[in-house]
Length: 256
Image (cartoon, rainbow, N blue to C red; front, top):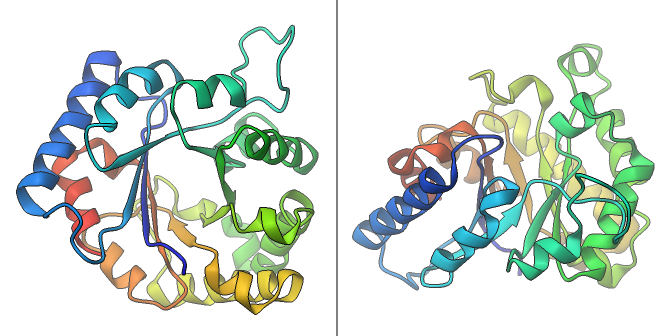
């Protein structure tokens, strides 16, 4: 059975002290407002900047969180100055890694060939990829949004085996909604999530499609996440700016 997931992507924000304090505050507010182990508790993934993964992991393992990384190298090791390998990330006790976030695709020109390598190296090092896909506003206006998302999945993810696809989370993040304050409507999100699940079913069968978690990313907040996640194919959220506010992030967690 697929999981409900709330993942907080802190992007390039916080310093080491701020990151630890934010995590502690989230933990405190959750403990205060939500009994551990309560039925329906979502999987909570916090995704800090690279330098703080280790220090955040020390706190996380005392609480009910999981840690992820915002990216990983497509190479396993070697003379790649400035890169961070999946093995390094896993050794810092992270369990998840974002692959193909729209900001990586747009600002760092990450291609489908590169993303395939990242998915492979992540799985090889026991990291769960959160594979991001989504269209630009021009794609949606020209009614190419389904074609764009299908192409991204076909090229970057659907080379995996049936056993491997079960280890992946898919995040649909319409680029026009990220950081803009404008999110997809519940109907738009459900339509795309249902489409993505149908693509998984066509490639890997109905059982795998029903088991894979597909989360929504794009200006998620406490006021809209509940309306989004009530849809049968929306399994949670990839939260950006709102995850930097402990009270708001906890409200989001409690809303699904």
